[in-house]
Image 1 (spheres, helix red, strand yellow):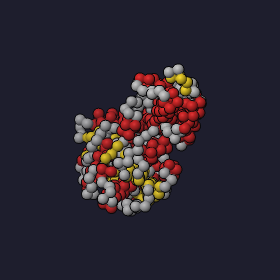
Image 2 (tube, helix red, strand yellow):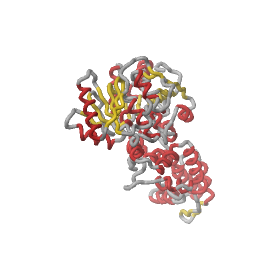
Image 3 (cartoon, rainbow, N blue to C red):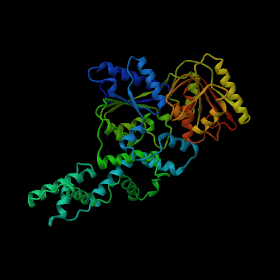
Image 4 (cartoon, helix red, strand yellow):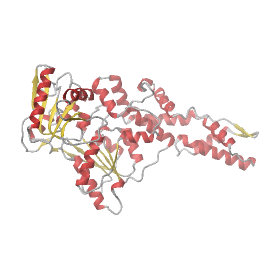
Length: 477
């Protein structure tokens, strides 16, 4: 995999702890060495899920003898493509909302916009706009008519152009014809007015209005929910960008010669279509479908290959991160017997029953004290939601030296960190503690994946504290 030079795109589906991220980083190092005359670290881009993970990557690459490479989040890419004109909730906002309340309407909106059928529907809508939306009419310039049929013919002639980019070409055709037949030059303010007249033959050139019109056209206007302050949901961001791309075009970034996409399962069809157009280079795409933080909008290697048919896919089933006991415990959470544990034995995971919230806090403090007396370097206390993490951090920060990881965090180091499962993805800790592992906290399919992600961060020791009843995902483990 590391030395694969033939595959244009390499998709790596690897279980938690299989070493897929390490392989991707070694692959970058290999490519930089093998093609050192044609590619440098400045030509590689990593799309990473959060700043903490990016910090981890930046620490590893120098150890491999390579300079740091650029990294971006999908939010940063979206901001640039939308020219910073549209406000939106980010990916972590959406995950937090899904985990805090099981909103079936939100789930439906996400499912609709993450499906590949959305692209077909959007293309159909834009074709209908092209066919029925443009209403040419005769215009008169210096008492000389320019017939509607000529404007229509000119508009259709440029069908290879993005829809809204055709107006400039139509204007130029009108200018040329008026000059040729009527010996009159259209310029300055008159040309500007001509451009406005041509644009008004189309119902709207406003991206927001055209996007809103799409949902009316589908007969499902309720699938678009713009939040207070004209803020769009994360599930709308890349459909908006796809529509903008079709209407106005998009400039490919050809400076990037190799793109690495981590956590591939958390991106969906329309996002991959944008990335394919934006970065027409070779790619290494890696992730684990079992670690999707949003089961309503996830991708596996097969669905990604539908977007990149020239991709080669490989599967990694052996987990090297955790002890045999932890791997056997965690694979039952998601009922994946195919996961193969290495024969490195250690302490079995402990589910610690607590009488009440105060007792649970006492037991959490006991586990922290025990960590300080051990030889381990890192401990992750992994909560389900950021609200829970913030609350626990507030209770512990005055008594212990603890870091809080959130969407704004940029440093990865040793010691004790409190975070969420979706922030901890890609990271690992010597010891992991999962608090509130009860049925109330972990009961949905999204919760199941969060619990799996949290537990698979542990290398050597895993503790789960709970008050009755224990989450059904953990019973009989």
